[in-house]
Image 1 (cartoon, helix red, strand yellow):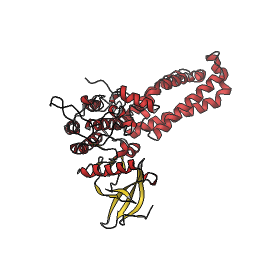
Image 2: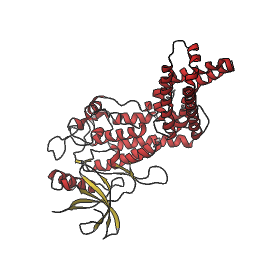
Image 3: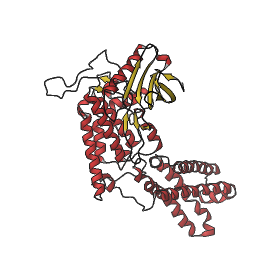
Image 4: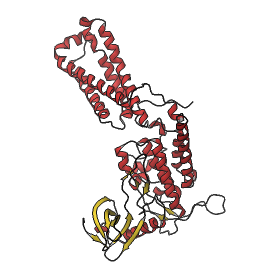
Length: 453
């Protein structure tokens, strides 16, 4: 495809993305000498009326919205031999790619949410419902600081819809699609609202649900409804409430949790009734956070989360890694000297077979190698994983805390001091992980934040 000329003027440079319906190429508009993006239907679907209709629908929907948060449509080519949309080329990465690359802080989450809500408000004013808001369809442009400009992509599933009418106005609270050809299950399952799964009409509040889920995933690092199989995912969306945001992100503002929970209500009537309402609440929260920061105060969730160690994040991680290396050295020495010291072990712990000691060495070594690797590579969920496996780690390390007794004849009371130090190390590791990761957004904190006063 590289170098191919489309419609006599668009020269394809390279592929930049693809999906179920088509492929997106970066291309050069030789007439206007600018870079553009071409969304082209794949050859296998080129003669499928359904997909041609969807492409045409996407072009009409996106071109109807004039907003900096929506990629601009320059042209729609619909001929006997060629079918594609010419978009402005948006340089940057998708939100999904950004989530893989770094952690996104609370203020950036609010910035993303506000920009997405603002763009959707513009779409909803034109009675257009996106119906497929997800990290893959949100583009982040480069910025020296913050997240830069947010662009909503892919209106391929957009639906022209009658506006929502509030109860008490003398008409129904909601109406079906303007062009109603029967209920269809459309969207990406993991991000569908309950009404989409039930094949009920979608409206602006369907997009609001998806925005809430999007922001929840950014803040917590997980989609709370994804199950082991599609059936369990559907059941979770229809019946399960998302866990409190503080369970995954202890330093997230409580107000953000309230906003996201309102977005994720099962009944549309209980959600924000417009994207503009959502924008207002997000903007108010961001204003509060910035105001408290400028006045020297933190947010309520953060100010009650005092770090136990006044050391840098790098120092905390370094000390944690040093402890893991010390444990691994201890296990290597224990395995080496086990055959020659088995009689001492059995004198202190009668009836304990050597195979049990060897199994203990193997299990403890595996656990500490895992956390050495996780923290060494700065895996985002290291703290949460450490917290969940802490009982196992405490059991293994407590068993090894008794090993200095084997040297009691040689070093006397010093062995008791070493034993106390080894018993303390699991808690020291937990404190170090908390100090290392809580300031980075809390999602990986190893300790829950205190309850608000």
